[in-house]
Image (cartoon, rainbow over all chains, first blue to last red; front, side, top):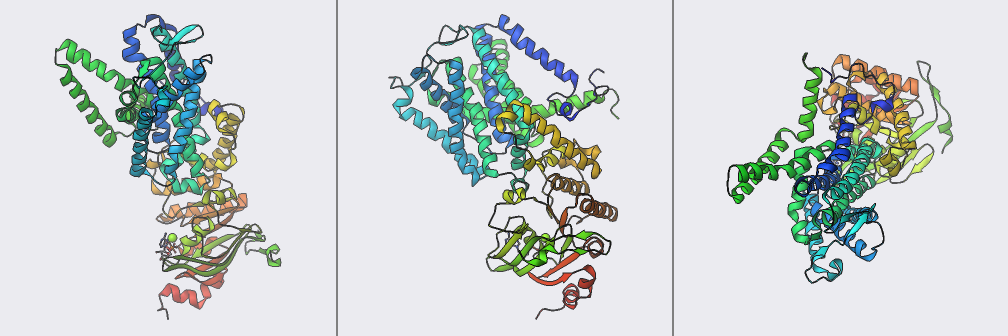
Length: 358
Length: 273
Ligand SMILES: Nc1ncnc2c1ncn2[C@@H]1O[C@H](COP(=O)(O)OP(=O)(O)OP(=O)(O)O)[C@@H](O)[C@H]1O
Ligand SMILES: [Mg+2]
């Protein structure tokens, strides 16, 4: 009964285009922020940080990035893993070359480098679409992984071919390296995610977002009303790659600490993030969160239920997981292309009308 | 620019028509062996409603596509507001103040009615990407100001109650109206309408005719439209170009065109020699 638009009148166009037009939604959003920043850091331990929370935060950044490109601008990419690798290696090179500069700057610069690389690999999108573009980005994926394996300069000629993050502090707390606490990792990633999600939300609800969606829905009509396809597509590649690059940098420096490129940023990663936005919802920031949460949570839940509770062998549970993901992808693609985000919206719409649906 | 262009004329219902806004000179457009437009010249004057008619496949849509920069003619010149226009991409043409609708509706199906119409105002929105990302100062102000303009158009076309509806869910007639709204949002100097009433029932056609006349009257927008319904064409337009098999076979007021023997033959399907 409380979830209502009634009595919640908008008196300006500004209010009407708010992110959360219903004040109840807005309060719930503040509540989530308060819990995320004020409560969880005191409860978190290594298990929760490493198994769930930190990967969720980092994948959410990647999913928002891919959603901007694929969900909003309609350009399919299978190169997410490769672009995350660019972010990771850029961050590594910067961390080792300029040890005195803040890690935050390095992470953001890594995003910037990835944006440039993304624009470069986005150039073919001006000529090709759909399936062919997907194949081109797939080629980018394999090329980038090969490059980081092949050229020793990228991993500073280390014997193992791996890169590992030296310890860096932020505001006096270690955020990379073995001494990092769970809450420091968590808070560092959370702060970056919150700011980036806010930026993404602003971009997608404004002029540039409408340009992207126009290109996605009908590129010919978009051009006729004055959208330059070149700048629209390349800006989507740039912004998207920036997000993906930042997530790659965090994945390497904060989450894993040491990385072998093919293992951490292989083609499976591209598919994982793509599945996140399909399940979560194409063209929705909230859906990026939902999809990331779902696919980070799923293996953990299955392990707890299947292995710990029912005592099934680990490999069987792993197979079950693949089957579930596969079935969900097919289901969402066919039945609900807007994913969990749309199911959530429909549920809210029902709630708004409840208990008198007509 | 020739002298003719500065003179205008007064229509039967007393509207003042100005000088030449757009002039097509000896346009020829070929697709491989097919000649879609053959050496056609005509002009569109400021404030006028200009119709292009002709049987199916006559080359009408092709002509509109040449005007909006979609096709580049092999021969001929396109003049707009007194300047010769070089080859341009469609988005550059849009920036000159030319907006259009399509024969087969070309809306952004995944976006709401409001967002569709807001895209029509892209060329009036100049804030940079950083300002938009931060939703700061100019970006936010611009969004509100342009929203205000869009709301005026929404009121004008009487589509207030579907503002937030995704376009994909609308019936055909309303989609046509939203597409007109998106074109109007650009505040074009020249508005091109490719069969704005195709597939509509009588009532919807009357509404659409009224909107077209009101647009012309209230905003002074010059309009070039393609239409098959002769009744509508005769009612709406000040001057008519008639095309058949890529050639111009008539040009004048509705009355003149109606009496033109070539036009009568074309419409009655007299064999071509
Ligand atoms: N992109 C294209 N490629 C090849 N041929 C084309 C193309 N566009 C149009 N044509 C041809 O040019 C001729 C004119 O087509 P156009 O669409 O301009 O006719 P129209 O007068 O708009 O007809 P209708 O009333 O059916 O809409 C036709 O013979 C058509 O097949
Ligand atoms: Mg046509």
